[in-house]
Image 1 (cartoon, rainbow, N blue to C red):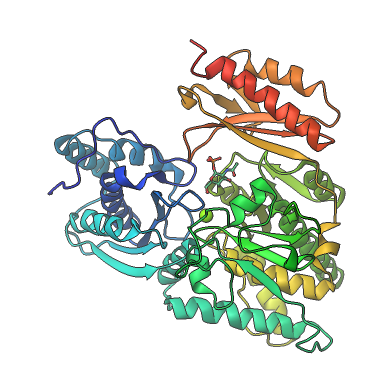
Image 2 (cartoon, protein in one colour):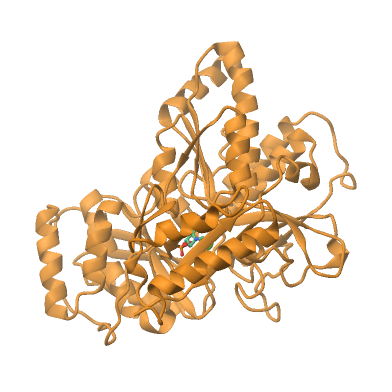
Length: 518
Ligand SMILES: CC(=O)N[C@H]1[C@@H](OP(=O)(O)O)O[C@H](CO)[C@@H](O)[C@@H]1O
Ligand SMILES: [Mg+2]
């Protein structure tokens, strides 16, 4: 095996919240190694595997790489420790030894009847093309392995293609769009009442100057010539964290229904612009998208179970970043709410526990999963009633901004709701997020779905003392899995209180772990 792309001196990267991510200039050796790893995964599972080259909502100079497993979901967590070891092997000999030991342990044989196959996708980052080449070289260094370049794609499209290929279905990009648009049209047609074009108020989409923008025809911040920089003052993560209009939006849009995608279109939020000169928006975040989906599905299930009597287990999955008001709202609806650590890989896994699992992070990553037994029951039932065309609007592989926006549009139309009415489902508690640079973020460990600090000793007590000073106060800290920072979250009954709480907790983090702490 020929090992190209040596690891740069002193670089250590880990398979974090969503794969490896770092400045694009230091990541090619990692991407090459992920190519090898994906080919091994393909041999192990005798299935097609995916590699996506993206750094999502991060700045344009970053890039990253993640693996899609045969189901279209994230790489199994069981392989993450190996991904870490393999990604950081100091020299070629060490890497070859690691691979052969791992292959032996996992019973992977080379040169057998099945040849590994890996689908490759990348977002619009300028570093994407050369990194894709690094991945391709990594794949080709495994005997017989085949790499297929699927081109510039959104992250969910690549995951969807892997899933559909492994189901033996046609999985070209045109198939993806056909499925989405046919399902959307079909669901819209179910809604009683006619609407003329002028009655249909328009949706305005912010494409974050990324790949989502490139896939839509009518979009602002499309990333085309002269439209601005990827994720710079635009996109879902910016809108959710800053709560101000993205670039290209302003007072002319007051009150209109707007949606922001992120740089690789696996995350989305809605908003409407408030009147006034300060560019403030009313944010409709992932928690409210989740609440809309949950409410709609609960209503549909009530109709079904009245007719049929089948009890369907509906579960909601959130993280500690979920606004407290959303969790209260969902619980008051009588829904079961589970919390997991940050990262779609954890939420997605938990959502499998239910007949219907709806999961969302507050920043807009999420989807709805339907269990096989629920779908087959539904199919039998539909056949009894009337033949219904196959409707698959929701991407089952991973959260998908394009399919998510279409589902929101269907439900709002079904409910007859404006974005304002949707936004009033409940009132968000004011919150604030801060980042603190520390010497070693791995010094922080957490428990209880990241809501409590275990180490360093004493930090949780300090946070508790701050929280106790506020009504409705809540705060937690955790190491980011995508940036070299500790994240601080706080909420309280007023914005000023949430800001103060976050600030004082950030000061404790700095005192315990910052550069002046030793
Ligand atoms: C607070 C926050 O927004 N965290 C994000 C961010 O993870 P961190 O581990 O917090 O850096 O990136 C992840 C991947 O895109 C996303 O899943 C997650 O929600
Ligand atoms: Mg993303």
